[in-house]
Amino acid sequence: MLSIARRLGVAAAVSTLALAGAGALAGPAAAQTVLRIGTVLAPSDPMGQGLEKFAADVKEATGGAVEVDVFHNSQLGDTTEMIDQARAGANVGTVTDVARLSSFVPSLAIMSAPFIFDSYEEADRFALSEAYLGWGEELKEKAGLVMLASNWYQGARQALTQMPVDTPADLAGVRMRTIGAPVWIETIRAMGAEPTPIAWGEVYSALQLGTIDAAEAQPTAIWGAKLYEVVKDVTLTNHIQLVTALVVGADAWDDISPENQEIIRKLAVEDGRYASGLTIEQGKEALEKIAAAGVSVREIDPAPFKEAVKPVYATLNLEAEAAEVDKVLGR
Image 1 (cartoon, rainbow, N blue to C red):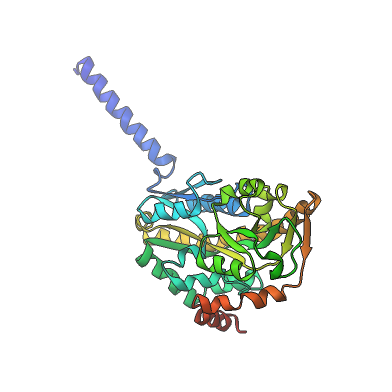
Image 2: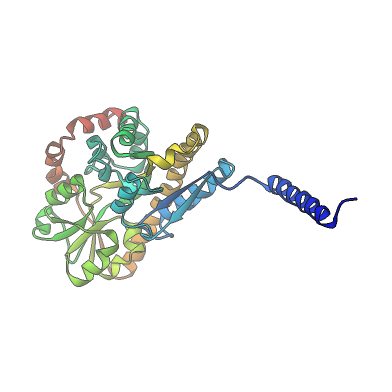
């Protein structure tokens, strides 16, 4: 006959095995890899909504083997800070304008070149071209970053000022916030303003305090960051189509199986198109709301600005890349 202690031990062991079996039947095990994706934008922004969909789709498609945690409103830092964290080996990724990555692979800057694309459809097509994907592959070797997709559209950039703008001459001496990458800086300078890179989260207060005179941003971001409260005019220059990339650190990416990597890349493209559709839809609504808030929203003839920025391509040695865009788009 078993002693009471031994009988209790056997019962405990049986109970433990039963619980383990029940857990195995209940669903997939805990995630093997968690990708932490941050953005400087609000959860309501199309990029935020796209990332939330991406997180749900990845979890379902990989059976929980990979999970994506999304952090909005600069919770993981500014975009440059998140890129630096990823490169340092942290499990961090972000949605970034591709020009920030051009310091590692200069050809990538073409995605943010002035007036290079007339529509999102053109940018999406080029982002999946052999030439562009080849430049993206270089990013892992040179920067420790993996580009999952480069078709996350945030909208056309517009000029936010305190006075009407019709030509580059109207921007003379105007301190305009822009992204701190060469193609953005040179574009804003060629448009007539003084480029002033600062973190996105500081733009509202900088405009409010007069630290900067102007900014440039896409309609959804203007509305999401409430910049319509601190500017008087939005001029529809459409000078850059802001097509961004979803990137993650190479160390975290290498922990994922090749099968799941393929799944994730496919979903990154699909959900990039989903987010981009929201951008286009909500961008129109945002401009209407900005105008209703009392800001002057004006269309202008872009020809003087297009002419003014032509030298940017030669300045940044992007003429060959521009020719590649023309080739891919058949123009």
